[in-house]
Amino acid sequence: MVKDLGVVLDNQLFMGPQVTAISRSCFYQLHQLHVVQRSPTEDAFRSLVQAFMHCQLDYCNALLAGIADTQVKRLPSVENATARLVSGVRRRNHHTPVVSSFHWLPMWRRIVFKTAVLVWKCIHGVAPACLQEVCVPVENVPGRPRLRSKSTGGVELSTGQRSFSLHVGGPTVWNSLPSALRDAVQSVTEHVRAAAEDCLNSNCTPSGGVVAFWRRL
Image (cartoon, rainbow, N blue to C red; front, side, top):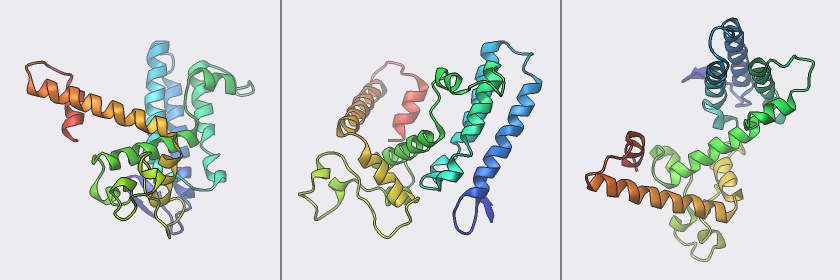
């Protein structure tokens, strides 16, 4: 096993050690937060817990795309424990309504969302070049002018790659999205880009976050 950028990789890329590391780190943080639970206000404590836990769960979680369900099913226990800590619900009580009331994405949906975000970055040139070579829009693939996916914003699906890699997982997730949703994302992207460029070329003062983001494009 090797550890790179905080991610534990095993020789078979089953990602079991990484799931174990995530669970261990999250439960340790929950124990530490439980100690200071009465110090901040209820809203402040909820924000603090969510910031710690979601940061742990979302970090490099696209690497978990396509792993065995038995591994992914180990992570919802972290969200359940987080919900119990924030809400004060006891362990023996049913926690599903509590988790739903917080509008948190289930772990497997968080993985799918992160994968889709990576593909979006590849399409718009925000991702590193090595990732952009993996997720190529069909419209940019020479010799495929008649594909229906060309007009729907699809991404080319690479063959001969392992199912959990970005080569397959990224295009599979992106192409599974409704074409209307992909078109809406593209439309919003173009409108925000145009608005940011107008502000940069005029005397108006847009928010720093918008400018910093669209300058990268």
